[in-house]
Amino acid sequence: MLFHFKDEQIREVRTMDYQIHTLPGGFRLIYSRAQASVSYCGVVVNAGSRDELENEFGMAHFVEHMLFKGTEKRRSIHIINRLEHVGGDLNAFTSKEETVVYAAVLNEYLERAVELMADIVFHSQFPQAEIDKEVEVILDEIDSYNDTPSELIYDDFENILFSRHALGHLILGDAGRLQSFTTADAQRFVKRQYVPGQMVFFFSGDVPFKKVLRWVEKYFEMPEASVDAPLFRSAPNDYVPQTCVFEKDTHQTHVAIGNRAYDLYHADRMGMYLLNNILGGPGMSSLLNLSLREKRGLVYTVDSTYQPFTDTGEWCVYFGCDPDHADKCEELVYKELKKLRDNRLSEVVLHKYKLQLMGQMAIASENRENMAISLGKSCLRYGYVDDLSEVRRKIDAITAGQLLRIANEVFVPEQLTVLKYK
Image (tube, rainbow, N blue to C red):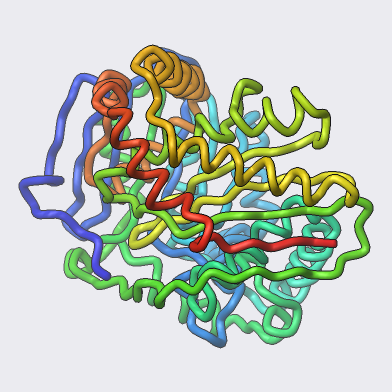
């Protein structure tokens, strides 16, 4: 699948809140001015764990680690100190579909951050000695993850939900493959996946647009021909719901129940966000929290999540409870799902839920680091960014009938995959 936009869509887009500029090689800059002393910036790359070849499982995350381990002109200690010595912060993460490298610095040190970002993204050397050390770090990360069943269950659930597809395998990879990775392996992956036309530099801070653009043009040197370099992704295979029980040495029973859902471009994506928020969002007033925790005291944690990808999506309910309560908790989850399938929300209740979601989004937008990363992702996926007023308009347009239809498409019992840790 190839992600790019027509020239007239992305060459130069301006709104009151942000600007998008496309460099000759297809590399994009999205800029947002903020009256603050700290700048947030970074690079989002359209490359994640789903883009690995079969012999590369874990490579996207591995490369993310290795970006900090040495470039043509810097050793790892120099990369670490370049921003930290002026109080800045440099970090990165890998998801199924993206790798993000980002930084926070005082405005006066922004050029330093831009130059460093360009250096590690385009000039990392992946020295074998550093690989041998970092593999041990990632193996410890895997062990730590395996010791946390409330997190591990999501990965195992996705592996079942997207069986035999790249979206299903673990982002962290496995020990055997990690220990076989070499400098040449990492370089091949970066050459294939870190394509300027599939990358966005994002910025939020109190530095003029022209100055940021000048620094990006200066340090992110890239070939013009790369704008149309393709990114190949295959959609997931046909879905077959499953019920699986894994024996785990845990004090609690952990349960995940879910289904495939809408992708990033689906017309019902915002409706699915709202419906999921009603069911098991972060608020204590979610239907699942009220039913399983507040009314009956059966769980400490219960929630539901909706994650859209470029060509599919994932919806999942998770709870952890005493083994004696597992059957009752599962019964209550299905009961709440049935209510949403059978009952149309009243206009008064729907309005209340819309206000809740709008408020949560407005509060989340105050976290400038997360918002800067969201700018980059939105630019990468859509070529534009909806401001809060547009998001509110879309939420306002959701109807009770739409939510009822979504519930009857996604929450169908016969289509649900179930995973239990016992």
